[in-house]
Image (tube, rainbow, N blue to C red; front, side, top):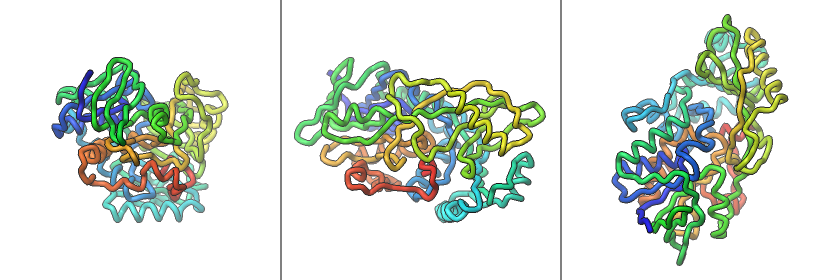
Length: 389
């Protein structure tokens, strides 16, 4: 039997970030358990968009702190997140502008460097944009994108160097709870005696927590991404754009290509987290291609280079379940991020580490308690697309 002061279940960007921060703070024996390889789940196919535009103060504070950590990631971890500061645009129709303006005002009060651009200013920023159906956009010059797999791998490597034990290809079979306290985590390889456990397992927490009588309303949504290659005369896409007017996103990718997909208002296809179709559907490619061609007419004949599908762990309000689990001492959850967890993961490493160590975290995340789903206190952002938070 192994013994640990804290067990982290899940080797994605959040779990590895927490393991790193625990090890960095000398929090005793830290064991991370991952069912596959580090970063091999949805983290490896994350779009990696780093932006600060949220509707709620805790999410903005988490995103702002995470951007700071991404900006100095090599100094922090000794590894790389492949962070690129490309800038971020959130484009909106005239009808959507009031919500956008409210969010920008909140962000500015919290110290975010963001502004609102008119359609004319958007054309100045990128003359290739079609802006006739836009009322404006929020612009964050310091935001951009990073690589999920690189981030998780770097956090895990740094945690290992600091003494954490990383168990890959190891399945969690159950969490042992006695007298309302966590006692152990039983895995396919061993039993780990521990008083504290974080469940940060992407789409899989229901299988771990429901045997304890804890309902976790997380579903797995299949989410697709298309890779386009604009014509040479178009040049490179230089900014990350999320287009509320049409409901799609695009971000630069290596080789002058673009990754693009749909900003969902809801889950498009609920699947089982194991064995789902990881390819991209032809009708989806056509749908995204039409939106891309409308926003960038000079690249309407972009070639399709391929695509893939990954998973979002979606909750009823598209907001995460974070923090202690009521009724079980030592049990903490971080799941249900609904597509916007990666960008928050560096700061969540600090916040969840503080909670696991019995400290008051720098960001109050109590509004995201798992218990809100039982009481009906759901959280809804100002925008129709739940992924925007």
